[in-house]
Length: 238
Image (cartoon, rainbow, N blue to C red; front, side, top):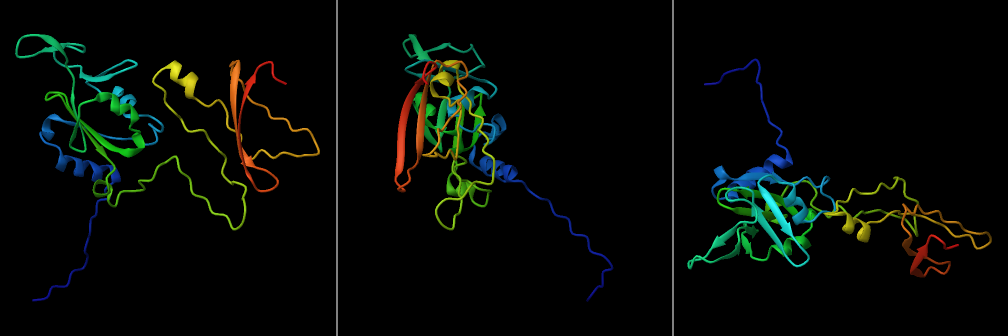
């Protein structure tokens, strides 16, 4: 039999990339009912490493010194508590069991060398003391947005160089402490500085109260050869 319909209503739900990714993480995690899923916000954590990111998550305490990193739970006996072995001797730090793509990480200090643009999501099971970290593998990220390194930019030129049309904006970079910021941060970046051989060339740099500044020069000379040089400037330099 055939039936003629006057009206057909089709409803569709637009699913975001974050929702798709969360569903895939749910399918991977054991004891999902006791776990919190954290989808990484790439824009918020540009330049940050995993240790910095874990500090921002609830129920996690990070103990860090020059030689080691320990990721601990804020539940139970408290951060810094020591577990006892079979003989009743204390000495092992009470910390999370951490897995990177289901591979156990016994040395938590290795997390300092993993950048957040490589990480898709983190799950935390505070009751079972388990943290699962999921990197942007092809299977996990299939069909989800752009997974390229956000620090890379692609531009096209017909010949030689082209003047950029977009204004450069410094990325917001996070540092774990003031010392790291002073040692590794950049106080200024000046693109497209052209030198005129017939007139003096003046370059103004904001010192931000620093007494010594290391200036990196990258460019090309009149013969088309690449030029690289680093110069130490002081506040008394001419």
